[in-house]
Image 1 (cartoon, rainbow, N blue to C red):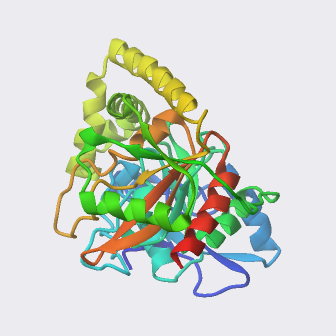
Image 2 (image 1 turned 180 degrees about the vertical axis):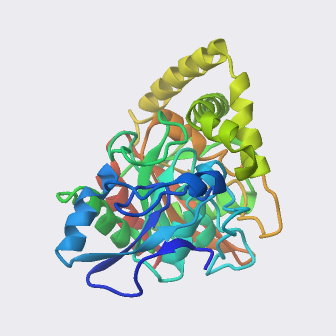
Length: 373
């Protein structure tokens, strides 16, 4: 039951949807999987803005809400470990962590309990659990899907995005946000294979991504992004500062209702100075320019989602977002797709497009799936 915080129904008409319990659903408290918030939360007066089309579909009998899903507390973590509501079991790889922070939405999809999982991604929180659970996940362009009515973590990095078993499921999910969303056939897509020597990526993981591109048979060029590490550091500063501003009142009013690790992360944001945040924003602008230049020559960038295979349940890994956070800093869309298994653990490829390139990503992702199958 650790997948769910609130379960609505066992069956219904149309597409089944699991909603991360950061997202307001009318008549239901939003807990963000945090005891301090759960103790005071009142039923939401209205749906979050991103639920508008979903609600219309539900009322038309074309979709149904399975429930609200568990997550890493306050969305501030990448493992999915939760001291209050339990850690969701990874259905396909029960020896591994589910990943976070959208752990429950990922495990609901991986277990077949929902066709679509609604998640959020601030530093990798859709792509990391998708990679750990062997499913697909899409981080959308910052601002494309409204976050009004979603409990924030870092507003200038927060995005809403779907999880599904495959690209077709993600396309259906995007149509729940944007009714006119459509994909198509893509040919001769130039791919930039990103290498990040300083990130110490497992060679077997790199080889799995290379094999996907080889089987796809597209033109591939090598791309280096020297500012990747600086972008990660900038994202860490921005997230810390904004999370402190968002959650400090909750921490101060109910310190015993927030887990020790999450509380320490929130508190650390108090020490971020204005000068440090200003420097992070300057680094963000430089990074965005570097990526813009990279897309002058290629349509899609490719790299792994994780530096290594997903970690085991009893571990306390660090740095799971080293290959994901910089893309939140850039504000770009990124797709996580299952690529292979290494030693019985899933490996995911990450595909990145320019801003508002979700249609391209899912069209290209369908070609990737076809090549692998």
